Length: 253
Image: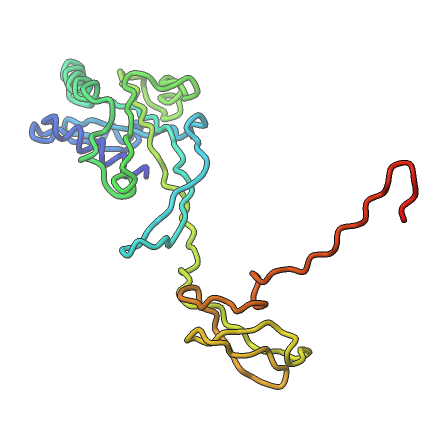
């Protein structure tokens, strides 16, 4: 998911005309050694913080269908993460860097989210927006000065960029759909006539379970014949007689 957000941001900045003007868009850490090797105008989009947004955590899940419409898996809901970037411009003069940084800012503030057409992979399959927050890094993200101190470089003008992206949930496969009836087989310990009546595949009665036989009967889910009186679970039950009522003020006869 993270590399897909990187690619979406690169395409977004490329559409603003940066690549046509010879500006390179990279995602390297802007360390002092890295800066010493730069010779062309560069926009660096450095990811330095990844945190989950607990307010967006959902419950439940979704179903995954195959081409025939059967459920083949169940997927947990996506988890949302805040990706915080430090965007800097590198050129020969400070004026050129400020001008380049201004073009990047103009491009980013024109979009509340990464356009869906620029997303690929799992983000495109989910079909969810990836919101952008330009100029703010969130209360929990490290400060820009702390980032520059950790990188070992000098403090430079930068743009705080935060993208909130979904991470696809875990898909767990389900059992295949039932296409055949339940198979009943006779077993030891049952006497003839004591077991339930079974029906053959054509719907006719196949007889009771016999302990000495090794016959198999498959129950059918559709087009079953109606059970005869006294058969199956729908047979009438014998009612017990109601208890005699007691007379008031006297004994029961």
